Image (cartoon, rainbow, N blue to C red; front, top):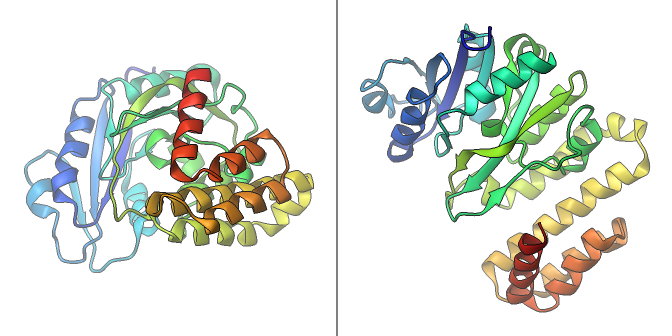
Length: 297
């Protein structure tokens, strides 16, 4: 029964004790039975003082091995029927796990995700069509907000893709692709995760662009099996991300315009043309486009 199913929550952490407490407490507040494993990737027991305040399994690594290898260490120690990876700067809403366990057991699927709300108040919800066979969406990098913290995975399905390779800037993407190759996805159409915004996180660094390019190279065989538009969309989405990141640093940027123009060239559509036009007006143009998009949604 879903009410009795145990969820193993694995939190890899690296010198973020100030955030770690909030992540742990969000797990303690779950309405679903959980076991919690904190994997300290500092290599020097930095998180032990926080972990010792709670009833959990603390795993101190001998050295820094990276987020995905740390997740793998925790997952191999997990005993629950389901596994939740939680970034140490994110928070789960109290019913997150219960809602997803119920959905997985009702549908007989192995992977569920949900929406999320960033610390600045921006909410991202799943696209209504992004369920079932989502391999093409995962390869296009258009499965947002499916990330490690929003996903819940059946332990047996996760075991098929362990150990997770260290993919700086592409950890979430590689995991989604590997799972989507064999399993269907479902989602809860609500924001059940509070997403942290950390300035030094991989998700805000130029390493994210490099990570996406490495993913495209790594899964070259899968792209070859699908329509050319899948690879084109992956490249275009990477270009758009590069442009957005450039405008975070500068009010106006010729490099950002170039990136959005390249996205239009690779995959011409309103999804690339509108951002390109907005980028001509710099950051104000992009902000205006985002406000209009939110109103339309």
